[in-house]
Image (cartoon, rainbow, N blue to C red):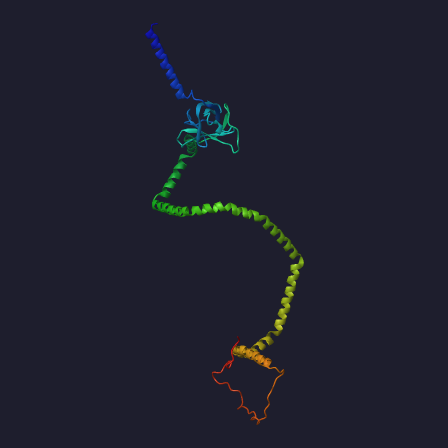
Length: 336
């Protein structure tokens, strides 16, 4: 083997080695990772190697192998060594898609409490695999196969007949519904605020329920006590009082009515001169003050003898009330 042949062979070996390294790098064979296994009842469509593995939306690894098994699928996962401390040992896995037609990824669900980090070789159970569009079509096809074509045709015909000619009404209904939803939308903040305050109100009601129950129990005891005889005795006494009052009023109703009728003119007269009563009491109080000012006790009276008055003559000397007269204080001030 000459020198040129040796150089050519070395060049070919170098190219093959470089190609192998590039292929290994592309396949991720040279990447450092922490291997774990996810068991699923099925892998689903569009689950392939390279799919992301996420925790709380953060990518922590990739799917490296997808192996079908008798019970479903076994997914080999490689976790990033720098992020493996963020993955608890007792996580569960959900196989979910980004969209209904999109590729799937593995979502690791953290437990509620703290846990130690996951170790290499751990096995994670899958709790849920998202429903795929092919399953939906499969279920729909099963439902359609269960329906008799003639009855389905009749149902569609009935719906078509009901909708025929009612397009304007349906459009008006949609417009009205949109208006109602627009009005309801403006009330959603207030509704949200009410719902936020509802727990405290319900807590208050829950706190007063024992007191309300205790009050009800006390009222029950009180009712039993009254029903035992005290209330009956009170009502009997009240009935007797009412009967006696009715007998009394029945006996004096006619005399009382007559007395009120006779006293009415006098009461009307007193009511007409009621404005003079303050003047009368003021005059009496003034006389008391004048009498109390005298140093000598007693009442001083001056008596003068004069000619006798004319004898009383009837009816000439009867009192006369001239028009325009009425209650008057005759210059005396009213009450101060």
